Length: 206
Image (tube, rainbow, N blue to C red):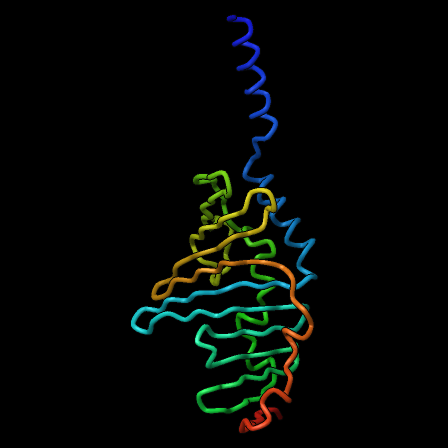
């Protein structure tokens, strides 16, 4: 009986060792999966909480150079194609057209936000469940980029290795990116002027 128990324990330890993965392996796999699917288009929700201002939640879809960002209350929608941006304000029924260089915000860089996201960070596995890994990312001493936050929380889904969420805090704001998925059509990120025939057009392009 003792021999049987020893064999069982040995087998279980072998299986656990086989499936155990290092932080580097998990992050590397996450990066690989993201790069493999990014040409399909990215969908994500970004929540920004600013002290004394409030909460802003935006769903962003991006495909190549094109993107569409829709605020949760649907009052404001912005499209871009790398050269031009179109912003529709439903409350005012106004459509503002501008050069992309003047409005290169979060939406236009959406598909880059998870690309090599842990570069310049020391990543440590904090905990895990049967569905996800939870990582703490601390800015490396050699990272001199002032725009990079000091700390980030990253959650990666087991099975798909897709990033589930990324969150961080600044001095007066906290940012959380979640509900990350792939699959965007050209129509979803292309501005259609026919959808707003009665809107007042403000063209700021020069």
